[in-house]
Image (cartoon, rainbow, N blue to C red; front, side):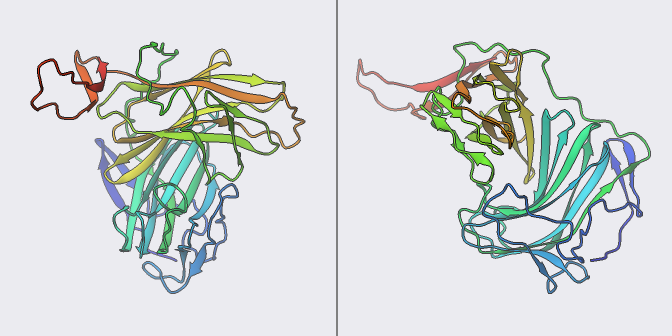
Length: 392
């Protein structure tokens, strides 16, 4: 649908940023006047219900909106992909939802990756998990694409907090006036200070606290159901093993709650061994940060690096609003024409997630049990206390 465009002048970080009324919407068919043209469901996602065009519910005029009607065990997603130069942009969307259940949300997620394939970043804007009913409202976000960005994915989604279709939600969401516009800046807007990116590996002390659940085993790692081309792993407990399947990839993850205090960075490391000589099929190690700031959920991805092909490490600088860390182990896609043998395998061992503390001169105890030690004890009675100590 067509709608008027306002000229906004925003004072940001001491500089004048101007949004032009003539700025082109870089997304195609963002008002859905042409039906689902230019929008498609990602082929690698499973259990998606079909998107619909609704001519009876629109935002601000026009003739159409995108409708996602909940179905048992299913969720919704459509996307567009763009190639854009580095610079500042504004993305926005009109949203409406009714009858949402089980903390589901409707949102726009924007994901962009670097040309070298080593970093992926994402953020999202949308409804709150505790608001099952919302009349039309507009959400927007200003962001900066770094130089060398290889792609930009724009997703419109309805999902549960698990990132898929369970528990069920039979509610309805509508999307309209989806836009992505370049921002004209009259004077350069200063960037935020660069994150800490160490240029060498961090030495992990054997006495460090390992935050990986059930480590050194891989029993807590699971295949994700929403990635269609992911293969099931093999495991004997102390090893996570992937076998090549042409056209498929390995992808397992475990979620870890962060510590309840700020640290300098998290460091995830894992040993890896590749058996056989299959070309074009490599290990994949990644940490996904889930950030929750002022009700908005953003995602930041860090890919593991190795200097010897055997020990991978991911250094994750602490970010404000860190809500969850997702540790991902897997493989790249196996070539469709690969001639794999029984000897071909990628094996992971010894997963370790630890922290590098900030220099505070303090000792910090976490998760003490029992939480309260007050009481009356008999002479000579032993009191057992379990807790973890971090020093910095």
